[in-house]
Length: 229
Image: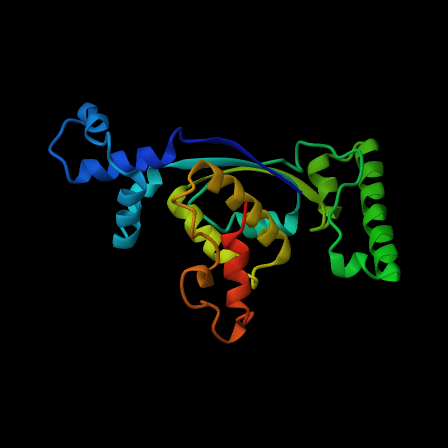
């Protein structure tokens, strides 16, 4: 898996502060930048976040490219509806070689790994034979498993990212999307360190949200996300 931050709002935290300042100012929009000179962006952002005035975070957006995740994970990802997605098409793209994800629990056992790869390689081999014989890729793709790799570009605003990280960085999240979300958080924090400084699963800033399903390791998880870089 490779996660790349392709683009983001220039000076995202400044943009958020400008939007928030506008809500409480009688100044013309073009005058706002002058008005925030000398203002502590961190102090102002802290007040916004404490007040829960999170709509202004929607003015900062982040676009990520993700290579090499399985269809298992892409199906989970697109459930986050407040985002934009462009995914590699199995209908129009013909796959000449097998690319797929093997879960560690399977890879760790030689017999399981061998049987898994034999079956998946066989599916890809039949897929190629069908395509080579003239079967449309959109029909041959019915063979391809959830393990098949995909590529996706996604855009989320900062508010939705906070929500996404709260759910998907949690130890209860499926391992692959958790790894992806954590990589995304590292990249987002580099661009907007204050907005995302306390981001992560619910237990980073408060009680665990998983109830009886808690991992029961809040101190360890808090330390992990505090040190994340």
